[in-house]
Every structure is written in C-alpha cells, then in structure tokens.
Length: 150
Image (cartoon, rainbow, N blue to C red; front, side, top):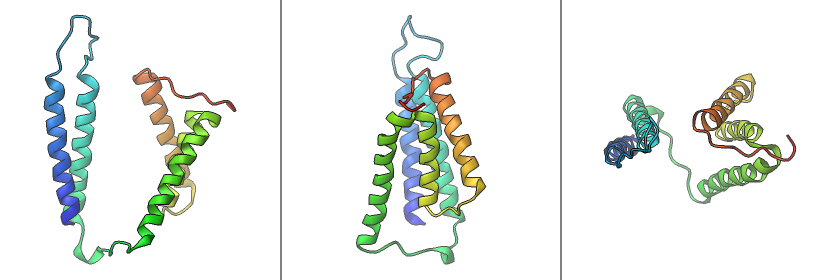
C-alpha cells in the first residue's frame, strides 16, 4: 500500500510539473487552435487522473488483502512473458495491421494478467482497440500500420 501511495503521489507531482512546463511552450503565429502545448497538457491531465486512481486504490485497499510479491526467478519469468507479448505485437502489426493487432494485444495482456476468459474481455478488447484506433487516426491524424494481410 505504501509503494502504491508513493507512486501515485509521485505521478501526481510529475503530472503537475509536466503540465506547467507544457504551458511554457512558446506560441507561434502559425500554430493551429490546439497549439504546441495541447497534446502535452492532455497527457499531463491523463497522468494526473491515473495517479489519483492509484492513490484512491491504495487508500481503499485492505491490509488483509495484501499478497506477498513473487519471489526469485518467478517474477522475472512473468516479465519475460510480458516482453514476449510486446514482441508478438511488433511482429504481427506489420502483417495484420494496427486495429486487429491492438485488439489481440489488449486481450492477450488481460488474459495473461489473470482475467477469466469469456465474452467480457473480448468485448472490452474490441472496444478498446477501436477507441485507440479512432483516437490516433481520426483525432490526432496519426497514420497507423495497415498491414499486408488486411
């Protein structure tokens, strides 16, 4: 609980500093309505919100629900599994394209983290993938890989 609380407070401080630094970016006459500081400010607000969620979760967690961290080499195997999922994403994104790959990646990470298989993780992965695709391609105009298969 103490580590989560500390990380949440540190994240909140980082978000505040990042926001104020983004506010100091120079404004140009050629800038669009969002400006150069728009995306950094959005990221700072998102980091602050997530940090608040971590703080709230740490404060609500009961001491009896505490689980001892994994010991020894088991935690490294768990990290290697996550790294493997990341590598699989990088390999598949060029072949399948961004949208199907991100949906599969969200589902794989959820199942790897221990979520029970069923229709809910599949639905959440599909909605999350579409929202990420929409955010990058439509809101930010960032082209995502199309893939060779689709």
